[in-house]
Length: 359
Image (tube, rainbow, N blue to C red; front, side):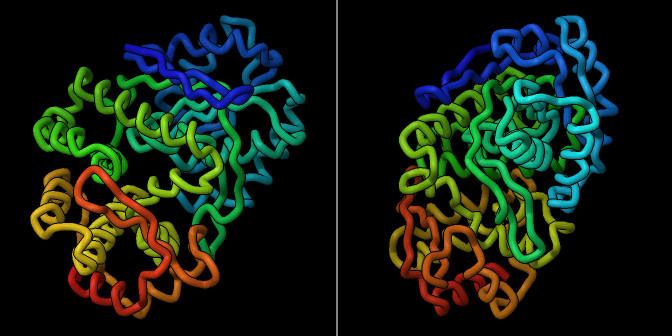
């Protein structure tokens, strides 16, 4: 359906968006000139659905794939899992030009990307995202990481893929809960960057939830384009790119508080978006009506919008967030719909008041 380009000089790469193009993966990555031995990292769920198809596609184009399936779940995005993958890669004979194919959602993409970034000091990475969240967000931009019990994505790096292949057809087998979780990141783009896109989502939410492929392709392409433009301007999150963390400060705290076993990432981010919007309203940055539009679309999608924990449990975790500076949390706050900025002066009292409004 289209090819986008992320322009980062020698680290530039293409994003191919299509329907039914997963079967063409092997042919698509031939130009990367990887070694024949290639490492497919996936989980048991996705591997059961698409592992054979990917292996066949790679094999018929001259690759010798080694596939490793991890259990499904955020708790497996860990150093323990990374060690298992390093061992499999070494025993499987991967060399410095062997590629890593990340076949799965955000957990697999982050973990496999972390392996690619660190195995033999860096080998080629191919992202093949199979969840909506990964297709519109985590597969693009080069953030790779594993979690620590005290914080999400604390151990990681910036490591760009060499190619991203997105097949909208795979979303047909996705758990509806995962579709909803992915839409949190899509809605985020509308809030922070494009009020017109936010309106498009409001108008087409039924088609999106029904997995209409044409509408999904538009949503994915617009989301990837928006992220690519931001990443091109600020690859290492030293300025502009930080606005992509709207909703993530509280969201990451919720994930850590529940040991990554209660919320999908997008669900936690949705709650964080509501909390951040409440802080913005309290500061006079966002109108009440605009905040209600944000809350309403999240509810219409079926995402959670209330915080089930007291401020006393959440606030102590915020200083561990990667965006924290000098022990103080930093928040991305909306300045109306379609614009946002980073604030490092949000006080505990403001956070507490916003969280109490979302209980």
